[in-house]
Image 1 (cartoon, helix red, strand yellow):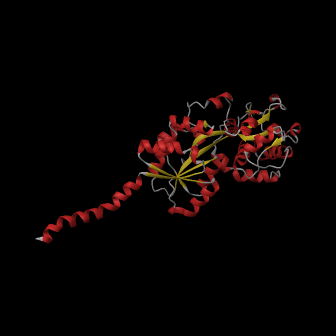
Image 2: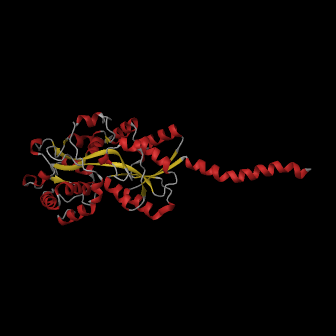
Length: 345
């Protein structure tokens, strides 16, 4: 009799043992693991909102873009990452070429992101737009003297230009864009004159270039526009003061337009939760997400019809280069070689 009474419990335990793997897999499927080159403060509030709305938990690992790509490559199929979030199309293209991303195509993604701001094969999608602009000293430069990137190679700018090093991906992508539109010979000629006009050896980041212009170490500099926005809103009085001493100029408005780039995201090849990762990209591209993300980062929305922040609107509208940003990655190696030939350190 006792043995008969225990049969139901044995059956229950057996059934639980059979169901346990499925239950664990189900719970794990409601997770997205992100490797992000964007700072946590610039993305975490949106990720929390995504979790609140969908119930999908998000685990965030932040680090430098190059380090995260190296980590993804070394981890291979064992990587826990489902999504790579990084800045610059050059970095996204490198990840695609390294084989650590997989296509994540959907009608929603293709409708949200203009064709020139995403991978043609669907490996990655732009999330925000940034422009590489000229900033100039308002007390020493007449904006009528400015026109294009190419014009910065003219003799009048000798000893007056600040810029960060050639190792920086933003500068590499700028030169790659020049190669795509102007060709090798014209780009080489421009680089020779441009590098010859440097006021000092390249050093520091984009904020340092703005500070150098404000301090009178140079008169113009090339920077990504969001750095100026961040300094104008900085809690540090010195940064705000430096930012108010410069003005922003949109280059190449009479030609191909100002060089633009993106921050973006792609689903990893090793993703254990690819559907959830794709849903997160779609969430980040919704109008309300685009508005918050762009305002928090002082960048422009990639989704058409979403207005930029009031600060960015105060800088006026501009004509942007419409080259597919994947070209910036494809031509990266050629850009680095061109910068080396010009002795851009």
